[in-house]
Image (cartoon, rainbow over all chains, first blue to last red; front, side):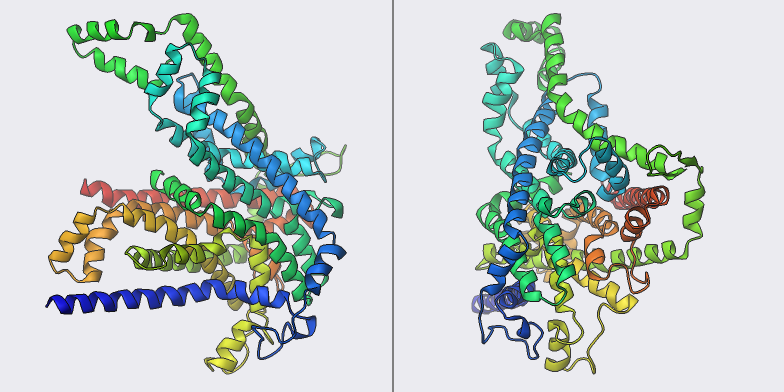
Length: 281
Length: 330
């Protein structure tokens, strides 16, 4: 009977692995095919049967994508916007979260309620008024227009996540600093932030990726090609060269490279961040 | 101000007089003086202010403004007046057949992607909730589409779904012979909506999976084992033990996915552009068209506001629906 059980457990495990592998193939196949196409000369991108390993490999798509459409430039724009947004948004939301998690003050509940509203409202419903606002603030067609609105747009989620993390830091630690005469600012910088490194990493990664991938706002306010970020660069590129799939995917590979690298490095933080956010909610 | 935990501890001290005395004796310096209390309140506002100002400016103010603009025939030319229309833009939407079609398409997208992501995400999480070799690797692979930008995956699926020469048709037609001719994936209304739905599911499985997996790992092992000893069949065991335990998480995921499905934009915008002939418009692509192609900001805002109302109503209805049975149990 024991042998039977072991054999059954073995069968169950094999079934699990087969199903998981089949799913994994479906997940990864489009990416693999994209990568393969990015190395194909244009004549082969729609050949039947498809060539998964192209008979004729070329890197010209990459060199052409990088040079001809200023993709190097878009890359730098995206990087600058994502880095500045991440720094600003993480700092501002950490400060807000600290106020909401550790202080009792008039208006605290209202402020937190408004942040929850900001979390619930569909982001694109504000597109028109935001556009008018950006126009008034002279932020149209400017990378600062992206930074300001991305930072503001990420504040609600970041504050929400950081607040729940700060609340779990034992109050006794802060108490000890109060006894030593540490003011709120000192406690924030010397205690709360250093203790919250994992949570700050999660929030920083989310913000970076959200800014790096953002498309609609950038499409709406940026006209000047020298200020394109990668997502608009790629989308418009496809619009102009609708059949140059090799070029489009070489550009795409350049754009998602950093994302996948970041994800691979910070995988654990990612997963725990998403899970905490959800399980807490 | 007085931090909350301190308040709580001094409250507990007031339960008895003798204890209260000892609490004051132990912690005399945590009785904040008025000066200190005022200083702490000021500090709290200073911490909150910069971020909250920005949040109010770029999020809260535009929410209110969206409603205001929707009541006008909004003029974008500086110096010219905008005309107040009352609810005209809303009645215009009600009489606009393409609005209804966009709503239908959005509803269809929701009906396909929400159950699809939940069932497949949950199934994957259940399969991974064991000592499977290569578990981390599987998790990474399933999560990869989640972190990839919508722009890239939309173009990628557009490429896969090309009628002649696309990979999807090659597999289904030339390889497996499941269909007699190449499918025109993006050229007709329902096939296009289905293609968009397939992309939505593919991109979202990993997100649902990660959350379900975390929830399943929170189910006490003793519970699962007790059911196993009882000899309950795997499926019955799952329904009796794990499923009720992760019910709140399923509710959360459902609400988030429903909201997400109403936010579908980039994939439609890039893959079908709402066409052919507005057949595949969803609410946001239709809004975007009115706002930024026809520059009718009033009507565009009315469409946005209708979308927001639908999302709120659906979210509240679901929270109700999910809450009731749980309360009955407790």
